[in-house]
Image (cartoon, rainbow, N blue to C red):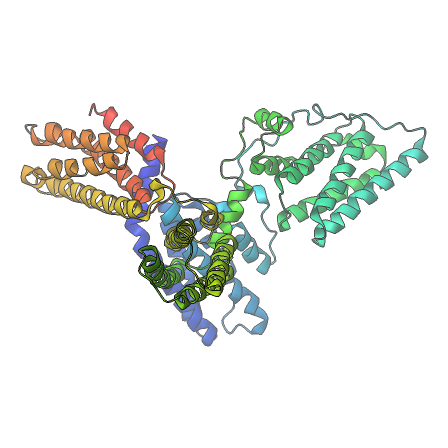
Amino acid sequence: MVQSSLATKSHSFELVKGEIESTIKQAEQSLERFQENRESGEDLQNCVDFINQLRGIFILVELRGGMLLCQESVSLANEVPVGATDDKNNLLTALSNALFILRRYVEYYHRQRADHPELLLPIINELREARKEKPYPDSCFFEVDARKRPDFCAGLDVRPLVLENEADYEIHARRIRLMYQVGLLGVLRDRDPLVSQKLIGRAAESFSRLCNGAPMGQIWCLLHIVMATMQDRLMGFEKPRKRLLMRLEKYAREIVYVGRVAMTKEAPDSLFRELVYILYQSGSHNPEVMQILSAYDLAPAEFNEAMVLAHRKRLYGPGSDVLKSLSEALLEEINQLKDKVDIIERGIEPDISELGNIAVSLERLANTLLILDLNQLSELAKREAALLRQWEQDGHLPEEDSLYALADAVLNIEEAAQQLVNKGITEETDSLAGEARRSEQSLYLREAVIVVADEAKSALTLAKRAITAFLESDFDKMHLANVPATLRSIWGGLMMMEDAQAATLIARIATGIDERLLAAKGAPENRVLEALADALTSLEYYIEGLGANSELNPDLLKLAETSLGDVGL
């Protein structure tokens, strides 16, 4: 049932995607006109109305990230008065940024089919801070019962500190707090984060020993585990985490100035929630982390912090239109480069100076890739260019193995350029520099996959339209006559792609249309029609991923199987 709702959600989004993009554009234009003429209250109100309209659409399609961003944008826009002076420029800038990121998030959701509102947290907090509201914590989208209190000190060697008298207690407390403050100051100033983590972790361990089993010791034990995990997973300190550590300093201060009685009270649920969330987002499977997460019936997040940062970088980077233009320009340059390399590979004697021309092209590509932060691919291009320069200087053509290495490098860069549109500028794209070309990675095979995916998508679209026409014509079977044959025509292509599961589902749908719609007497059952529609939609989304060379979602095939199985197809 959950899978079915996900498919319905994606289908609903497809229906309104054009409306969303048009409404964002209208909101941007209204805001731009208001910025040019700040006495135009009508333009400001139009901007607010368009954002409210977007919020309503996102509620309908259950896009939580877009809904919350629109909600915060409206709140901010309402703070802007007609005739706004320059002191309100920060509000207008934040609102403009929000609309830009909203457009990018719509593009992101269209590609990924996944709503990750945590990606929008920086811009949402920027809007809240612009109107002097308290920013949301990192865990605002994290659902967990923070009232649970497992023993966070259970897995640690927390030996109580030996204190001879009250003066001894005060000396220890002040020294531990100073250690914490030095670490906190390093974090706030972004100075040597690894050392700062170690200092805070050591201070947390010492505070837990000082508390000697008292309730306040639990938060310090948890903080000690969190700091160790952050070191292990190379996690950084964004603004919300800095604010979290500053809140914890308040309890360190109380331990010093209030004394032992400060240890007898418990830290608030919100602090435990934030620290548990860091462990959840770390993706760590260390025993002490797993023990805590299991106490909350959690497993390490699949969409962990490393992925959040990578996707956020993609979200806040160039838009799809920019990436498309960039990709086309790179591919044009690479095609010219391939022609030159091909002449050498075929043994057609070129002028030795042609090696220098190829080197120039590679150096130009290397500089472009470096600007795009694709450092590994840039280094690859520079390396090959240096070899070409050396061969030109020595006055001879390269050996066969060297030519193959050059061709591999060019093909890897070409594949990266093709991925820019769908995957953006990511580490995965850059890692293509280190991949050896294999038969299954052949660009010719990739082109074949794209052709098969396009054909399959067209066939599925045709089938969906035919079923709609069948319903609207009071079950005229002529509309379905060619559908089974059309679906079976793409079965072979999917089998060639070694995707037997998808091919089998296509065959089952074709058989179902034959047996339950064409051969049936009278009106078909509604549940059969709904099952076929769900299965076709799920396969369509699955094949979109195949054509886009993105990670395939096997859950879509499971959904199609479930839909067909529910009605005995």
